[in-house]
Image (cartoon, rainbow, N blue to C red; front, side, top):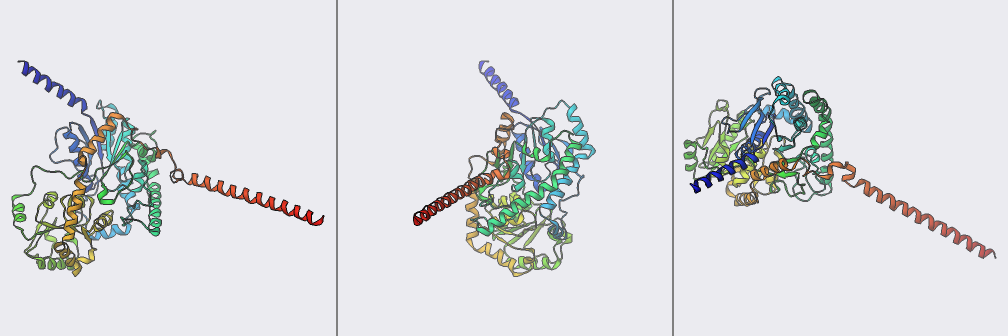
Length: 524
């Protein structure tokens, strides 16, 4: 009986400790981009596994939600569908109007307007009546920073998550101002030492992007927060500075080494898990296992439709793939009816493909990708070299970073209908340097003191335990001229000029007196 009582007591204490460490988190992810939510969903699942309770506002509710995960506001259907909905014509149009301007408007101000939806307003009104107590707000750092205002409303810390690289306006509000003299910005595709002209270009982009984003978003998002959250809420720029922690989907192996403050934590590859069970169907697994000559995996992600490429481009791709046989090709195609006839026999198309499981298969030799950060990280993790065909946003820079490491080749869309595509695939397949480098950087990417998930959850719990100000950088209290030491160097320069002037006038006076004395001597 004593042993049983002891075991029961241990279990009771364990349960008490577990309950004591459990926290209630409001996760607000209203952006209608599926690839972003891959990271957010993984993080929320990880938090739930650690015993926390997560209430979420999302465009993509989980199909099989775990216990302690609850959708409090379902935004699905409130924004235009982006999954399997980007034709190449749309991509070309986006490129004409893309950049910081479009990002701030479309994924910033427009998303903030969702605060005015009745389902959102009902939830916000009920927050003051509801006895539910939240310990933390988790939201995205990208462009719709109005949702960080939930932290002010609930009087709890805010942890922001960036599923992309940290743009200049993001690093600024966490006090981790990148030094443009040696930290390449998102508009610069150079990853080694910058020469003078590259530094000049880099500093222009750094301040220009900051100015554009802030000028487009400040008034609009501040007004929307005051209208829909609270009339006494500070400006969106002040709300950004209240963020206690920034988790960024980055890693030094991908974009290079740079100094970071404790408030910015790099958790690149957080969504990549070591799985106990594969999601490969028996049919697909058998096909991959039998592909002993190798497989080229081709996907443009969850948004862009490969089948909307021009027919002559698709026909040229068919010819390229046919010549590669017995090497096989696996393609993600949302609607095979839109493909022209003549698909080669060594090509298998699927509407949905479990990408991580496919990239983990030993017979995958090349990944043809649009260069999304999630997919390129998965290829890096599994040591698969790439042919990158970037379309927009951060994709060109993502691909360029792997080209710099000799584990990828970058092409344009027009190259798909020429021999350049065939040469690129053959180079990856036959030149061992690409696979060797992919394996080497995969090893570096995995070599960490803790997994990305454990790192993220540790720091989230740290903020809950210790409050929102423990990781704050003093840089947040300084203006740009103080951070760049313009005032200090200006003061030193003025003193040097003043000192030189004093010396000049003293010498001039001494010379005049000497000359006067000399003239008197001559007269005498």
